[in-house]
Image (cartoon, rainbow, N blue to C red):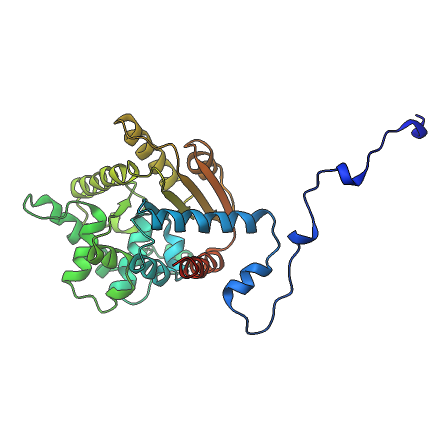
Length: 311
């Protein structure tokens, strides 16, 4: 090969992906959070984060639906106060969670603590055998068997139970606050996945009816997703499957849902949320990878700064 015959062209003609304007800036001690955001390098996840922030702000200002779906880890790492404050500030139009998320939320409201050592209690057969949680949650769910009882969804039944019990720590509960603010909170369970199913108090018919009603509620909420945003936070299987079916039902019934945003936030980008939340539904999609206890506070503060800036 004769390298003397290789062709070249001027750097002035070349399109590049990196320039000095993209580089990180040096921050200053004591600076504002918005100034800190401006110091981040303009690449990859930083761009995605800023675009997600913009999408949420746009949905809020235009009155479009903002749905937060999450698994139990979201509650276990202490993020419920952030979501509750976002409810108060108009950043939450609907909440969807799995059964374990509801259990941890219920225990925080009633006991002020949650999350046991599974490995240790599994040895003795006592994993999940907390009588108060099993009793109170199953009693709340069983109320659906009374045709005069409202509400009829699993999430609302639990939120109502927390209120009626006057649970000492209810202000820290997502389900309670959603009930008080009249924000749909849906709980999606698979039989046998949750500790409260291992109980003589469980009413399987009531459980099935209540979670099915929540599926219908979520379908209704998703039918208004045009121009809105759906966030899946830490649910690797159950909620991505539920979301895909809810979207199918909504479109099947004639609802136009073409222009919307989906976000998957997790420590690892798993197959199912990548497919069912990001690629298959259509619309704009973003994958934000990182620990929830870092990423959610970062997203929260960014939303507050941007919302204030554009007020």
